[in-house]
Length: 438
Image 1 (cartoon, rainbow, N blue to C red):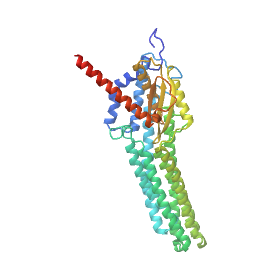
Image 2 (cartoon, rainbow, N blue to C red):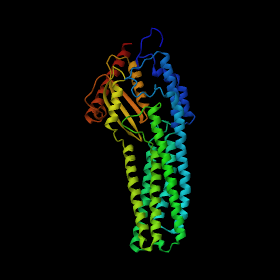
Image 3 (cartoon, helix red, strand yellow):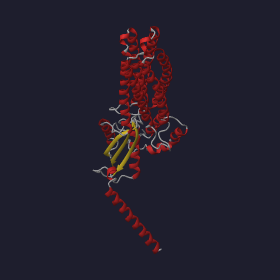
Image 4 (tube, helix red, strand yellow):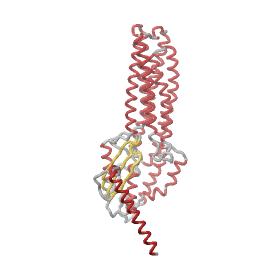
């Protein structure tokens, strides 16, 4: 701080004007989109800009109050290391996804060999699960890549983040349909008492069961890798440049879907191996194969139903939890003494939230100050890991009604049209009078 200078707040009246700072660094920000960087690489670059903003604030002698720095995403003391953390997390994430895809291809081929050797229904259920794992992960990789190319573009003005839950929902549908087909085959086999395992060679059966057991070990290792990558991502968001909510855990839909695939595969292969060994042990247990396939199919249908239901809630705009809304309200209320929070809304916009804040400021506040303060508050909210976008509406008085609801009332719309028409007529009359006087 310069000698003799007074501490300044972090609001729009401070020496640090966030609008001027963004203008100065706009070239670096806009260059990310033209270079085709992904959202994860965007985060690395933005963290460097955040560090520059912090240095700029110190040079101006900015002394932010503790309340104004609550959950701060731009001026965190950890900004200098956030770029390295994000790069490390991004590399670990790509490793988990790529390794999962190629090992799924290998495992699918292994299961195909085991099925043609045994013609076991439980092995068939596990094989179909693996085939769809490969197809589903290709869908997830495609949607995840295109959803994170840019935060916004001319084709997707609000970003394409909702492609990711659509991909997960597609996978859930495919898994459910395949499992119903296995259920049909299993019930038919139990009804007709026609099991191919009765004539199966013991050596081939044990070899197939051993391969299924090895697959269980591989799947559990991949499950650990995906969960570790997801936890690392969550810790980086909590300790790095982007603040996160205390009431919410940031989730990665793609990693969670792949992790669920691995768990389903480990479970289905384990059940398949046990049922296969039981059926080989004695011919009286031939029915274990069909029952195992039914149990696997029911579990897969249930687990993907729960996943699909969650993604539908994300796509349809389910409201954020009350604790998260209270956190946002507290943050906005303490952001500046002149602000009064009128309304705070947050609802799903894909895997993250869209936030709408309506705040009240004194009527005599200059437009420039109110605009810059609103923009700073917007950036503060959008710096949080679970927020996709934030819209700040500044009013001069608190209103008891929802403006978005009232605007749809037919009587009000007719009144507005009449008012606009009379105003235009008055303006036209004034222009004609002025022209005639000239």
